[in-house]
Length: 563
Image (cartoon, rainbow, N blue to C red; front, side, top):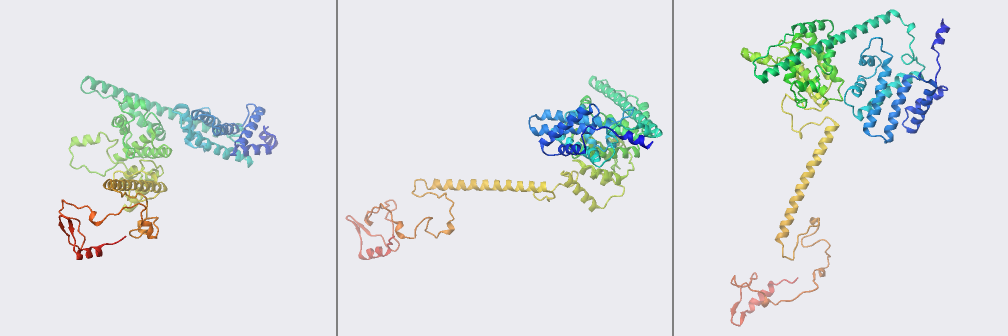
């Protein structure tokens, strides 16, 4: 028996020996494109020898490495690369999870989770097949992660002599038949529950859309008040189903097309898909909120609401790289609505019955629900997004046993730093100049702001200096003097000396000059006399000219200074 068992495990391989296999593995994960091309050629030869029995992991690795080689060649456009990466990633998810499928189809997310494949890779495959094509950046990231997964789960195990379970044909005859039967029944029950949950929620949506359509027609034709549809039977079935399979019901609710509406659903309800509230404090559009209110009020229990909140945070955690997406906004908005309904921060002791009716008509539930706040707090901090500071504030305000004030403030501050989002709903945020710096990005931003301020101040200073120079030049127009525009350190030169001037006094002599006698000086007749020399009185004027005395001449000579 042992010999037959050992013979059963032996199988034919396509590579010549272990050395060739090791060389192909090393070349596949090399950064050298030429080595990667050589490895791809060897795998093509293996496929020729193996025909249709080539290992799935080898085929998937080759497909993804080929994408990287073509990407680095620069010969393909971005759109072509996205399609190439998409085909390889879809092929990987389908082939790897195919062996895990039984006779009853199971969700790919669960199968991928059993194989430790990141869930966002499955979502990437879903986007390729059913939605808008992802960006090239996400394709490259998915390729890198999948290649690392293949290296760890297949190639490294082969190097270590590990078993080939999951990659080669499984020996089902050796497995426990009883366990197989139990797993099959569990899968079948799970699929039936999933199918039932979808059918119930689709029936609910169909009834609600019909009701809203009738209400819209009544309002257009002014026919008074529209009769409300009786949905008690359907809500009763959904409530009964939630008692048996709450997890499945919540999972389906959080799928696209239910609590996360499609664009077509929003347009049918008269909502503009592009008009959303502030993402830091998201709120569900009123019409869409009223659409789901009957269901939530029928499922108004502490267990269901807490489960829904935990799964909302779990879904937000998966969207760390897609904070601004349509799905992330509605998941955050539903979380906010549920927490706000349970918040008793404001008391309404003096309101009238009509005021109370108006207030509670938009609330998912009226009476306060006991929630496991420590678990919700941990789930909220574990799913950081742009709205986390707002959601964290709601949790901290509504906790049965609130944390110390200092602890709450530090949590909110750390959350705001991590999410890079200003916390709303509290006191006004400090001015940008006084705001403390906690991260390298904030430091770079602060430095850029400082450089912009310096450049602005310098520009204003240069502009003012130019205006001053222009004003001085205008004042000296027509004069032999002119304003010096050279940047001269005048403090280095004594008074009366200019840059480049020699210490020899002869340098002050001009080449061409003319002489003028004292008596030839012009006289300002309008002022009534000649210019006076200090200490010398004006001479008497006669018909023959000026009459100077000896003392006047002596004083005149003593007052002259020769240069």
